[in-house]
Structures are given as C-alpha cells and as structure tokens.
Image (cartoon, rainbow, N blue to C red; front, top):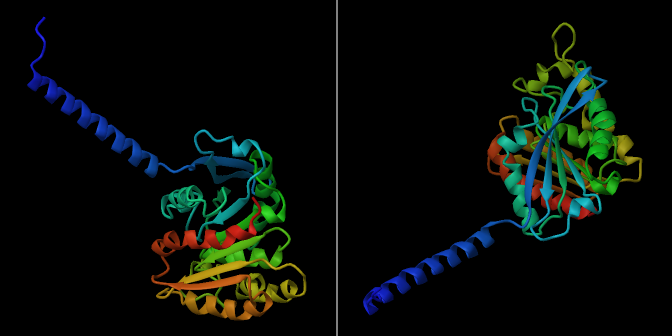
Length: 305
C-alpha cells in the first residue's frame, strides 16, 4: 500500500491539530460556563387537613458539584420560603422570576450558601387567616413541618428565612413581626403594605381573604392584619428579624412610599439589620427578577449553613 505524500500528511496533521484545539477550547468554555452547583425543581403536594384538599408547592434543591461529597446527605441546609403575589401560584417564581438561574449563579460563585427554596401556591389568599382559606395556618402548621419531614432542611430559626413579592411581601413583613422566633431573615419585594387601606386598583379589595359575605372589602380586617397593628408586640420582644425591602420607583400602587414609611418606622428598632432599595421599574416581574439576587445576598449572612 503506497504511503501518503508529505503534502497530504501535513494537511491531515493540520486538520487533526485544529480539531484538537477546537475540542480543547470547547472543553474550557464548558468548564467555565457550567456552574459548580445546578439546582433542580420538584413539584410536591401535601394533603391539607385544614383546607380539605391538596396543597401544591415547588422545591428548589441545589445539587452538589461534580466530584464533591453529597452536601444534602450531610448537614441540613437552610431553607427559604418564597411567596408569590396575589395572582400568582407556586410556579410564578420559577417561570416568571427566573429564580433557578439566580440561585444557581450565586451558589456557584459562592456568594451565598447552598439552600433549599420552598415555593407554595395559594392564589388570592394573601397568606393570612382571613375570610377565605386559613392560609397562614396551612403555611406554618402544615407546610413547615412537612417540608422539614421530607427534605434535609434546618428546623431552627437560624436556618429559616421568608421572602415574597407584593402580597407575598405583605405576608413576609407580618410573619416576621408576628413570628420572629421562626425566621432568621426576611425580604419583601414591592410589599403591598398599604396603610391605612389598599388603593382602588389593589387585588386585596376583591380577593376572598379580605371580602365580607356581602362582597365588600373588610377594611377593619385589613388593618388588624397589616404590619402597623403588629408593631408594638414586635417592639416589646427581644428578637429582631433582619429585613430587606424594595420597590420600583414607578410602582403604580405607590409602594415606594409605603415601603419608605415602613423603613422609617422600623429602622430605629434595628438600624444595622434593615435595608431599603428603590430601583428602576413598576410593579412588575422585571423588578422582582432583577432584585431577587440582592435580597438573597442580604439574607445570606443571617442564615446558618
């Protein structure tokens, strides 16, 4: 069999060398682009005795990096309960808030500790025991213990945080004030904490949680459940929950104003453990998607790993 000419041999060696260089570049780029931690999301349900039906929730689980010991098989991880807005559901933070990408990036960059995130779904109930479902009871008495039974999460205050947007932000601040023994930190994004009453366009005026049997908005119930009515009890106990609050500067519900009032009122109680941000935007997902990372960075130092 005749040997290839020197010219053909040089061309073959050039092609092989080029392919090897290309594979090397792709491997390096892949190593850089691939995060050390990549989270997965699971759909879960619990059989709620309080509601008499299934209660849906999603769970973000950070997978250990390749070649590393299984973190989840060892010490329990901190847990964040991440609440949607009045018209949202358990999928909102994943589908619209792109939270998986944010968590994966911050964990991979080691800017926050790995944590498990629980996203319950309870549309229109504002996470309160109001005229509709007993949403607060389900959240605290059924969901929390069930999560702690199913998943490797910490069950102490130092390993638990709560955050949410709009109605979920309303719930975050009232839960922090009412149950400071349960949460190490909180983040309220565009919290719907209108005082004394919600504006005409707020969903609070027509959601079942605050509607009387005659269909009218229950202003007295709103005021009883909102943060100002819980302030004295929070002030008179020793625990402080570090809080992150933000709002878009063009928020159509004037939440920048209401959030500023909250910050001005609470800052003297915990001057080193409260943050208030006003960012570019309206009452909208681009604001919440863009600022979730900032909220996570704020809460992380207060969460034990």
